Length: 159
Image 1: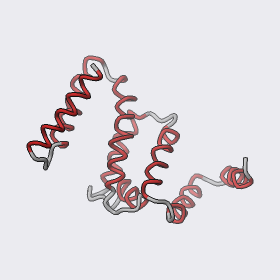
Image 2: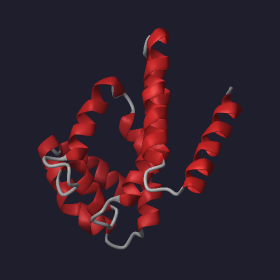
Image 3: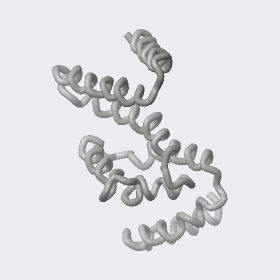
């Protein structure tokens, strides 16, 4: 263990939760200043499982989704606004992609087995419907066909 790790460990032990949050807020900009968006995305993907250890995702997801919408759903406040700033863009498109490719599949893997077997089909239908409807928005006929073919192939592989 390095000297820095030992020093941080001692310092963190003595700090209150509020002090840790204040320090994290003030240091985040400095910490991420010279890290590329790609490096930030990789770091987030690696940190997410550690951050979620011991959490009841059935309780947390509704709260997290509310935070991500912020007060007006415009991404300027709440979790999405903070993550957009942290990821180096106001729009948060990289964060949205990371959430869809990493967080959502992990959430489904963790939560779906906890749902009654009789209700899983209904839940899965809602997820697949959203994938088809929103996933094909703004696409040409050819793009929609290719997208649906990709989904069909994924379903056949897992069957």
